[in-house]
Length: 267
Image 1 (cartoon, rainbow, N blue to C red):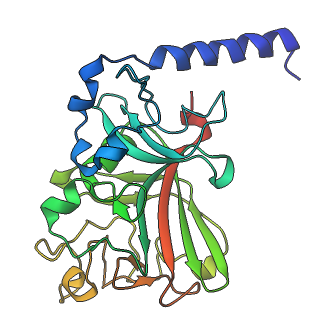
Image 2: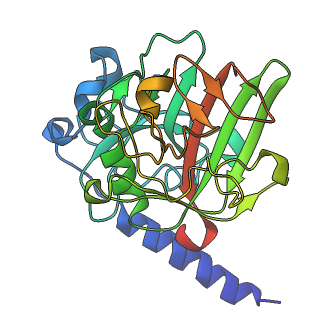
C-alpha cells in the first residue's frame, strides 16, 4: 500500500505536470486554429475554453480538460503535443468523459461523406452534429501517445460500444494507415482486427473515391459512398449512405468514433 504522504506528493506532481502543459494564448489566437473554418460564427463565439477576452487555456486533448474538474461536452480548442491548435468536439459524458470525437454520422444526417481525399484530409461537417475531424488532425493527435478508441453504434435496440486498446493513424505519406490494438470484447463483433477475415480494417490505408488504396479489384470508397480504411470492401464502414457493422446492425441508425489517452498516457 502506498503511504498517504507519498500518494499526496504523486497527485501534486501529476497536477503540476498538467498545469504546466497548458498555455494561455493571446486574443488573436482564434485566427491560428488550423480548422477554424469548419465552425459557424455562433460556434466560434462559443468555444468552451475561450474566454470573453479572447484568451484560451490550451490542453493537448479532451481528457486533460476534465481530469480535475467536471466540464461540459462541447467544442474545445486543443493543441496536441508537438502540433498546432485545432478545434474538436469533446464528449465529456461517455464513460467518464475526456473523449475526442473523430467522426459522428447518422442515417438522417445532413453531412455528405462521399468526399475527395483532400476533403477527408481536413475537417468537414458540423462538429456538434455529423462530421469528420480530418485525417491530418487525427494523425496529429494520435502520433504523440497511446490512445484508446471506442466505436459507439446505435441500432434499433439502443447503443453498442466496441473498444480497442489502441488507435493510431499514420501520416499522409503512409496514406493515413490505421493501426489498432487489442480488441476488448466478444469475438463475434470484432470485424476490424480479426486476422481470419480478409475484410478487416486494421493496418489498412485510407481510401476515397479519388484515391483507391484498398485490396479489392473494385473502388470500395466509390462503391460504398464514403472514405474508410477499406480492405476487400470491408464489412465495417460509416457514411451517410449506410452505417454497417456485422453482428450489430446492417443499416445502423448512427455511429461515433471516440478516442482518449490511455492510463499510461494521461499524465
